[in-house]
Image 1 (cartoon, rainbow, N blue to C red):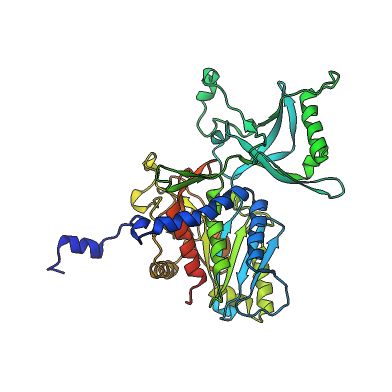
Image 2: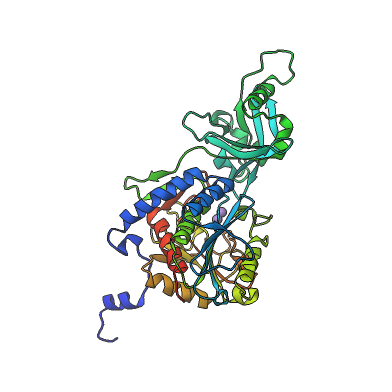
Length: 466
Ligand code: MN
Ligand code: MN
């Protein structure tokens, strides 16, 4: 040690995460290529139902078969399970017995948005509008004056299903929430940022023409309802049987002169869901059985039958254990799970919310997050050092550019992922994901190299032999 220069010592002893592009030459080109598929997935999978359907298509094209309970599976066989059209499970049977553990990778396909209320349509001030109830932790002021598309499904009396999507095609109209003009915002300007736009002010403009007959009481509402009836056969009561979501109407775009980033809606969490799905599809004849889970309801706490607090994933694992004559408890105890979700990227415009020494940075690779939560590590899974060590070695050996980081400064806020709902089942779980700028905004930003590194990390885990 004594004979070494300070420069040598710095190199050998100290650690700072480096830009991912330093990892290998030509990396950015590979990342760009991978991200073309990702952008197409973002554009076609803006809601959990659409992302689930898209995933099922990709799985079927890759030769996956619907899972059949009670059937014995051979190593290398690929199966999937579609939970209520909102979640997808895909598995490749490993060469090792299930009791050796399953390599699980769980991402979510729901994103913050505005859901229509049960009776959304009304008329006021010569306009037809939809009432909404926001879904997930969004900053309400960001959702005004942004073009919105409406996606969803309705069931008419008798059960006929009507799929609904307006605002995505170039020729489609779009919708929007209005905001005040600066000239008249004196009172609104005194509100806090959080309350700048209130939940009941997130009303979507959907029309302004009145029905010709001047005798009608609500002529504009009636005009819109007549249009919906002509085009979709709907009556107002049918909205009660609907799930319609308002999401930003624009497509994913490259960002920056260097095109190094992607700006889009829904990257939390399609930025993990897509790489996780691709890694699952590509794995052939793995040692451990792999299980990729694309779940719903993460943004509202994983509640509900399609969220990870539901038993649906674990019922699948139980049934798979029955198929393979494996012990369910031993299988869970030996398993490892990646909770694949985004983290915050350090934002130079708002440096004060992060501990810059323990923050993830856009462009420095995928982020391995030991704990999330907030207020003294409350409500976090807090992965063990053993598990962190396992993944650190795995990622290093696979040449993955990765970093660590925590969700902001201590006591600044915090957040959670599905990790604790998997860990609760006695499965070692850790968070891994892409750093995002403007998380939960209608236009979220990620670095392409980080998306590619997420894919490389997931592929390494799916194909791991230990
Ligand atoms: Mn997320
Ligand atoms: Mn989120």
